[in-house]
Image (cartoon, rainbow, N blue to C red; front, side, top):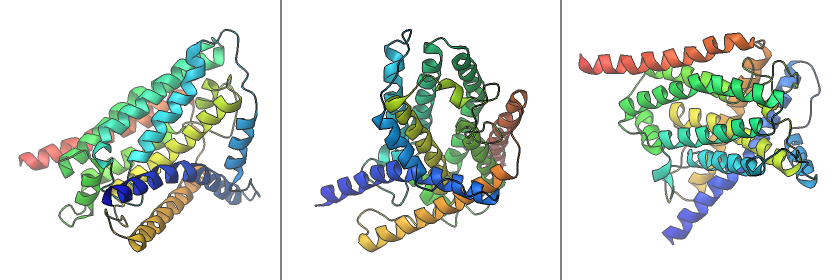
Length: 318
């Protein structure tokens, strides 16, 4: 009976992230539109866009290889698995042993690698530009993410997310400067990895400035739908990751009962609503940066993660 319950809860976790990811994206778009005094699209518009793309025929260039056809599914699978590993409404799930921060970083890096390859596969100029810019951002974002992982590991003595959440929720940790630096660094990495303002504008198709959209210009139909869902899942993943590590409250334990799971769902929904509101406020109040200033912005996350790690080393050596 316990095995069946664990499988059901784990399946709910995987279904939840897949269904909630487009809703979060639509919620952010709606809040941004209202802040700009526009009506904006409906919150459920991402679902309609995905369904419309799934019904369309995929047009593939003659110069495209097998990688161009396979990459969208690999990107979607890697991102979905990474998002499903992050605890949302419950901890101690059946596959929580694999919810490791290093494993999640590796899955995201694999999805980015295949996306960059797919952008260059057809041989268009815009695909190459987008892939090169993506790799430039990743060269700073990935080391920053690893330093954040090291900071969490030094505090919680583990990189497993359930252990990290339990440790940071305990009064033993308290407020630490290193955790504050890690939080700011993780927010910067999340903005850069998702191509949000000021790094990129997901609502524009201006060729000279776009990063993510330049890599997927040649995709259409079901292939583009897979990539769009993966981008929604990545945004949800980082929001869930920030909520799991730095707001580790409201989680249900294994075998807690329906009432406790319902409270976990409500707490997770509240975290998503607050994070979406803050993201919309941030993007509305700031302008997009020039491409040549992006290394300074993402490099700040690298330095903050390094400072957080050094502070923990110094405090332990004293």
